[in-house]
Amino acid sequence: MKTLVVGVGGMTNGGKSTLAMSLHQQIPNSCIIAQDSYFKDESVVPEDSNGFKQYDVLDALHMDEMMRDVDSWRRDPESFLRRRGLNPERAAPSGKEVFVLIVEGFLIFNDRYRRSDLMSLRPYFLEIPYEVCKRRRSLRIYSPPDPPGYFDGHVWPMYLRNRQEMEMYIFMFLVFLDGLKPKEELLAAVCTDVCQEIQRLRGKSQ
Image 1: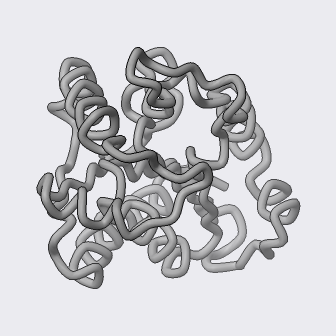
Image 2 (image 1 turned 180 degrees about the horizontal axis):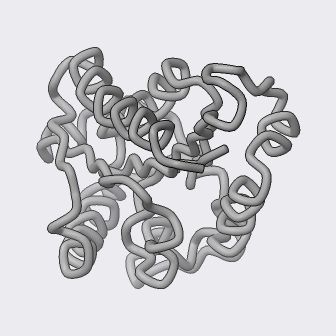
C-alpha cells in the first residue's frame, strides 16, 4: 500500500472545492481534508482596526487539528476512509493500492512549518481575476455574512499578502491553474497528472 497527498489551493471562490470534489469522485481510495472545516469559532477570531474579522490568516484556523487528521490518514488510510463512511476499493492487486489524500484550502501553502508534511506531488493553485472573484464572493452566503466593504477591505488585500508570502517559499513548485477555464478541462489536466503518479507508485518495488 502506498499513499499520495495532492494539494489543491487557491483564492476564495476560485474553484478549488469543486476541483477537489471532482478529483475525489474520479480517483479510487481518495478522500478530502478541507481547510475550511478547521476555522476557529467567530468569538476568538480577532478584528482589525476597521472591525473586519481576520479570517484570512493561519491563526484563524485549527491547523494543529488539521495536521492531526492528515497524520491519522497517513498512518492508516483504510481505517480513515471507513471512519468517514467511505469503503476502500480494490482498484489494484493487493499490495499495489494507492490511497490519495486531497488537501484543499486557501492557505494550505502558507504554513511553511507544515507544508513539507502535506505535499508529495506538485501543488495546484487556482486563480481568477479580481472582478470575477469579487462577483462570485458577493453571490455566496457565509456564516457569519461578509459585512459591507469586507472584500476590498480585508479579503483581497489578504489574498495579495498571502500570495506574496507563498511565492517566497513554494513558487517554483506551484502549478497555476486558470479558474476561468471549464471545470471539465481543469479536472482532466489535474486528474491526468495524479493518475500518472498513481501508476508510477504502483510500479515501484514494495
